Length: 439
Image 1 (cartoon, rainbow, N blue to C red):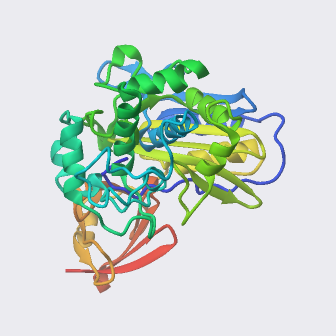
Image 2 (image 1 turned 180 degrees about the vertical axis):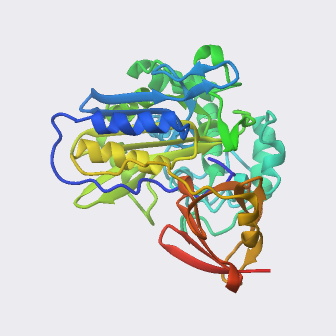
């Protein structure tokens, strides 16, 4: 759940065959050593197989101002991974005969458009048609302010429907905020209490709960963006995302949670089958990611500058979780390295060598680039000897030179090639290639 530069990819890694008995972690340790030495990543990772922790690592800072280092006790906002917890709670309520997938939501939310057509199941698999409130321009004007249920329902209702319920799927945080309120109305308890009673306590999760204001003394991390130096980001008030993105946790708790989910310690096998069944590439609070003959199930998360990934490979009984509170190195590449280590596959450790450029060397690239077939304008600016790109309606991000006329923003997989003589810029990302012209 995030509004900022939302170019987040789930795993780009490939998982090979074989069943790992023992991980050779020396090379993976080397990756984290260089990431920490070069100040490229702050966060934690854990890999667990069949309930046994195979690997964990924490680097960087929980809080830069007080020089508080990350540890295996560090806790992070995990964003939309929260949706997996919320979905599991809904299925528990269904198993307790308190809710059903097919019941419509008008008794809970009379002001929501099409409430008499939208079912609980439609909310779970993003087929409700309800507009995603975090996509609205005004979201960033209020996201740090507390909101009541009444205020959030009004905001969501104002966005109206963008398609007929159950006609297709489209990701919307609104769905899971509403599911939070349905749980609260059903159990007549706060969402945080329901999560604690139904999942956290029974599983013995030590570092998982619904967050509030960040508390460094409780080993919670602040999040940071990077522009010449780390900059602390404002906090989204957790009364807003609720079950869509308000959970705080850490990798070891997350791997335990997903292992227990897939061994039916939280919900029944039939409920899990419904949760993981994909329709138009959407499950109910969970996604499927196939690699070769294997497949994983999981979710990613993003809120403020926190980023997280959680996945489970049923065939290997392997769980992997990654959480970060600051990065200029792509989390995706760290997942590749971790799973390559598990599967005894090669991966490349970056050197972070860059080309030294003077301020005047950047001048030919400056300006506004656009194309009729590209949805945004890209503005290129500089600060001293650093080049920055900014897409319409998004924050500026730094570019690293890789060779003459070539730059990249690695953590989003963006590569830019400039052709100053032709006043063109070629943007590559995720297999796409776009040629933009300088205004």
